[in-house]
Amino acid sequence: MSKRAFITGITGQDGSYLAEFLLEKGYEVHGIKRRASLFNTDRIDHIFEDPHAPNPKLHLHYGDLTDTSNLTRILHDVRPDEVYNLGAQSHVAVSFEAPEYTADVDAMGTLRLLEAIRFLGLTDKTKFYQASTSELYGLVQETPQTEKTPFHPRSPYGVAKLYAFWMCVNYREAYDMFACNGILFNHESPRRGETFVTRKITRGLANIAQGLEPCLYMGNIDSLRDWGHAKDYVRMQWMMLQQDKPEDFVIATGKQYSVREFITWSAAELGIKVRFDGEGVEERAIVESVTGDMAPALSQGDVIMKIDPRYFRPAEVETLLGDPSYAKAKLGWEPEITAQEMCAEMVANDLESAKRARLLRKHGYDTPMVREG
Ligand code: NDP
Ligand code: GDR
Image (cartoon, rainbow, N blue to C red; front, top):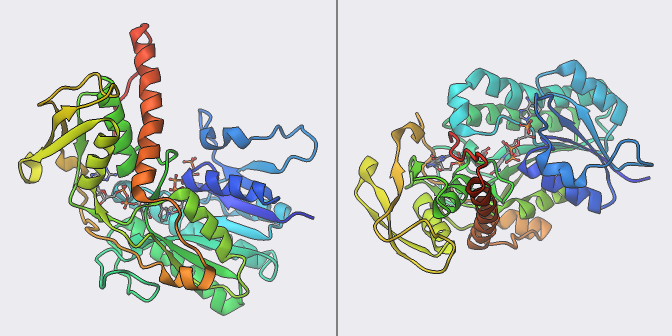
């Protein structure tokens, strides 16, 4: 009998990589998707299996983390060996706009799952992974951050995830449940949502290089992050649940870069050399030179990035740097893909899309490009 996994957030960045990973390991994978007026399964369409086919390994259920009876019913039917709770309103800036909804999904949603497992008598059978986050550290108390660094979240998202973190610990201590927190630092990929900073940059610059957008508008580009690749990080999510005893782990690369550096790398991948000019909200990125044929729309002196204060956050997390040594010592986990390699992969992917969109536009098809984010 193959193992059964249940993934919330299967349609998201991590959920899609994790589903692929578990299917390759022979798991039967169940996930919830939300009802939407348009199809929202782009990231998993390539692994979709017709439910009419014999013995499909991937099963999608309509579900929502705000719906207790729905979650309980699905868990009752699926009786999973492993639950990966990746579903969340995951955008930090959006959580300031929708704090109550964020708490309902990210905090209460976690409780709903844990309580359903307990209520259904699955506590001894089902292992639970909680997608915790470096946002818990917020206003950092020490650098680099480890499993022992105190938390000080700085957003409704971070506070909601703090509740979920402790609920996970509490169910482990109170009910002996196999429940683990992965304290994951930022991780990205070509499947990253378009309004997170790395993807906003790679997509935006590829579009600008192809003449589809005029300029990139950014928030705090001094911000420092420890960026890894989502593929490396989902492997670790699985490894955590294969231990004899449940524990919490920091997952990070141990290297830190600024948003400004990420802009410079992304531009360089497109053959664009940039220089930054001005200070604070006046700062701009200007093209110094263009080589190759990837940025036909640009020439020396073009301004490709400006600051727009609308992207500043009411409270910012200025710096994050993780220490993954415990994960390395205990589980032998190490990231395989560097931030620069990941950036190159993301730019290449977004350049292909931009070229396609340019071709469509050339032939008279409308291709609206700039989205808020
Ligand atoms: P994404 O935003 O790409 O995916 C979020 C997923 O959650 C999507 O499948 C989304 O569905 C689903 N979702 C949102 N709201 C609900 C809801 N009410 N009920 C059920 N599902 C819902 O996030 P990532 O893949 O990047 O992150 C995965 C998890 O890891 C999240 O919990 C995130 O907070 C956490 N995390 C992420 C890090 C990162 O750097 N990526 C770092 C640390 C933690 P839909 O597709 O319909 O929107
Ligand atoms: P973060 O990721 O808030 O760390 O949360 P994001 O990529 O949104 O921001 C990283 C840093 O870049 C700064 N920034 C901008 N961010 C966005 N989105 N858009 C901008 O225009 C912009 N300009 C500068 C931000 O202020 C911030 O400092 C991500 C999410 O995946 C969470 O779910 C996860 O828990 C954490 O990573 C770890």
